[in-house]
Image 1 (cartoon, each protein chain N blue to C red):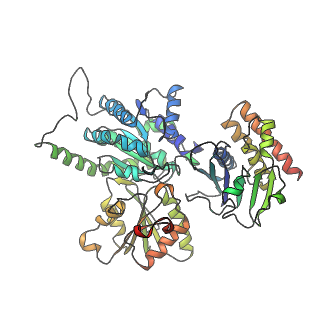
Image 2 (cartoon, one colour):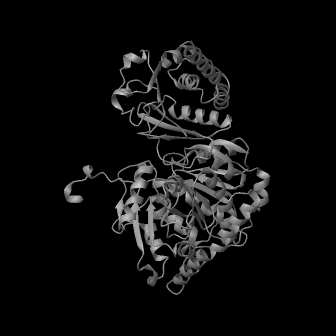
Image 3 (cartoon, chains in turn purple, yellow):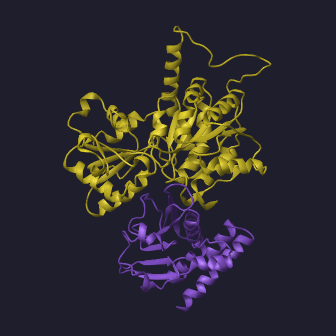
Length: 180
Length: 391
């Protein structure tokens, strides 16, 4: 079973990111589950969201505590929240930051990848909502979920201009990650 | 059609296809996407119903009471403090035998304030004369709503469909949403048993002096007990019509040759099943007894399922302060006095206020009760947060 934990702040589309990944996995013919773990329900508060993907029905309801994959939408959370807790030693962490992976100096044996998602979001979407870019980067690196399915999920959730902008942002993320 | 969908959205879509005539709800916290979606469906013309937005849950319950008494199929949804604010009307609805369906997105009770999941809210109203059905996953939550309207209308008893707040209401997972036609074939139009009508004035729920009140309680109690037949029949019919074994009285998992049986209800049974499979691979025989209908309580089914089991542990997301486990008491009561001897009953309270119930927690519980019975334990209690005086 694939387990993903998304960390961010209220307002960054963390729950939507989990939702989109789960819908895309479903479109790919997998079983999946996504659910949030809210802190205080307000903009700016730390939020976690969880995604599970499997080839069979998913029954467990526990929080994802030993993820293979971490998506971090706000790099400042690395200092305030024990984000690396439970991350598998051979896992992957994708961080929204302008810094290079080695400059983050994360204490983990997992693979660290970074992408300036907020910057890209501001340029393409016009709002600092990094989730489509983070999902795009994650799917490009791991190949766990098809990008076509993610794009379809985005367009269904956000029909029209908002969806198109998010798909464009997702494509930019793919290009960046493919070049690496 | 199979959809990857949020639990609340799934329930709203299914409830709309059950064609309630009146929906009333308090629209803000504590509330879920269920009524938000229903308001949208009604607003967009997808359901011909009266959606009454009200100023409180007390008012919401009162509106559906009045609507149901006037012959409407009536529906509401709430949780937590909202359900407690409804409580006076909840008892009235049962006493008037009004077949209202209410979704409870189970959440904790204040104080301290908590928006997170447990089952203390519906548990607080277990004695009100409402049938109470508990969902394992979002498929079952959706299915139970279709069953609930039929059960309510065939028994003239109100039904609460309970689903764990956040863990189910906010979870995206695959749910097979039936077609409106399939639901229409399963759920006939509502023919009210008793209508208040100004053209032929009469009152319901008015006044019963000491010569009569006790009998009204007896009759309601017997109606609750007798609803067993309807709950089982509707679940069996549902299996025939939709091919899914949803609802009913109890379910068991790998119980036949189990040395230890865990009894629980709600979404945590999914995690328990996962653990049972893992333990089986390690050579341990643990089984599950899942309570689907909490009220009426499936006393005879619980006894028959467990009569050969000597080690029983009840895990529940609520607590009777000053007494302990509530479901645990119900399970123990299911055994005749003579048969309680020689059996180990253990009681664990878990997941209060949204505390995660992990596989590790459950594994710890299993290992502990394999060694000795546990009279009462709060699973995952952080002793460091409690002063010595209070331990």
